[in-house]
Image (cartoon, rainbow, N blue to C red; front, side, top):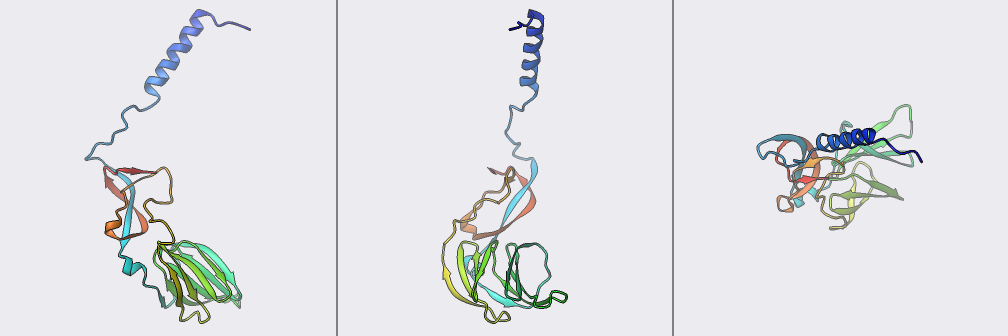
Length: 181
């Protein structure tokens, strides 16, 4: 095994010490007056969140998952609800309705029932008439309170259940955010 000469060993040692001294930040505290870009929770009251309505078709703005059942497309509008589109003629899809389901991200369809998360609740919706969707069943508090955003590596304003349910996260300038994920 070849040994390093004392001068090469000394150079490597000095290089490693310099890298350690200047290659990482030791002061990780954020100035309490400094503003940084992060995520802020958007709240709604529990009553608002649990109000599900069938509305006129809405424009797609932030689509998520798509579910195909029969001749229909169910497209999640992240955090807001589900678009129902008649796709029996794929050359001319027809928007049928928009089901407002605040805080929704995921969904599934079985038979004539649309299962969708409604923030902290799970709801089963009767979709037999896609122009007039109705709630069949609600399981309250089926999901944990949304106390942090899905993104990782971000600073965010800590969620406060006293203010209501977090229905989405928005980008904002934050002063001294306490939470990080």
